[in-house]
Amino acid sequence: MGSKTWADLAAEMKIFLWNPEERTCLGRTAKSWGLILLFYFIFYTCLAGMFAFCLYVMLLTLSPYTPRFRDRVSPPGVMIRPYLNGFTIAFNVSQPNTWQPYVDSMHHFLAAYDDKVQEEKNIECVPGQYFIQGGSDSEEKKACQFKRSLLQNCSGIEDPTFGYSKGQPCILLKMNRIIGYRPGAGVPVSVDCKVQKGNESYLRSVDFYPGNGTFDLMYYPYYGKFTHVNYTSPLVAMHFTDVQRNYLVPIQCRLNGKGIINDLNSDRFLGRIIFTLNIGK
Image (cartoon, rainbow, N blue to C red; front, side, top):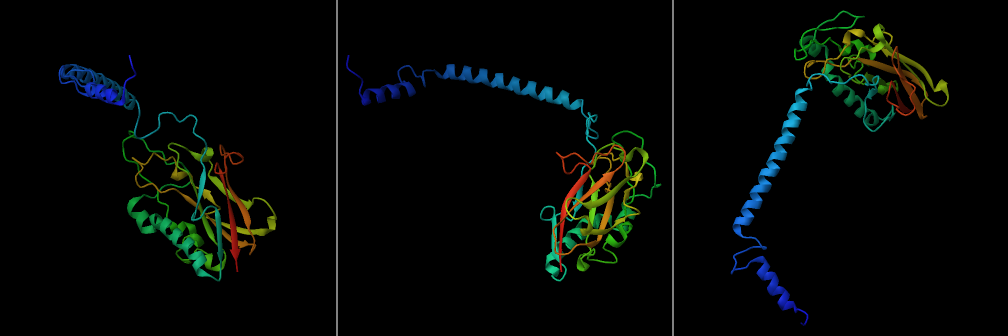
């Protein structure tokens, strides 16, 4: 028998796709196709139903208000404001266009901390102690007032430029929120700053607000965004009043308190943060 020609192969393919004598498509009749499609429809519907049921049962065990497992939550990390182009804050005092973006960012961030906003939404709390609130997890919790006026020279009220126009920039430090976390084990967590690497005399003076640069206990614990609706994270303002000009000055600011980890080399944001100041004339 000779080899098949292209015409023979094309004819066989045509018969395979549709055989008018046996009325089959791809070797199956309409009934056969209907049965196999029905089988796969039922099969995958059952699989989807099983998956949805398992997912539903799993969700019944979870709370939308608090994480189920919190025994391995790390101590808080920290972040700074303003944060525009990474962790280098560079500007020239004599060129307002270089520092105005930082000022605008600070005003935008502190809008939620305006005194009037805080007085309308939040309550006055007793300083120096945790604000423990009972009730169910779904019950809305009250939040303590943190007014921007507490930041004094870094509030942007008396000096709308936050010191940037004088070469004495303010930088805000905030702890990341952790549900149920009580920092300091009854003693307020404090903040200090120093030159991270290099000549320590490049950083000669830093003022901290509010008070002596501590996070008051009354702002803790945090109960989550669903119930602690109006919660605003407490801040510590660092006013760098005397920094060496025309130099890159790497600065490390750390949290200090019981249970705080601030010396882990593998995580530069755990309990500390490193940024660079470059203040030109």
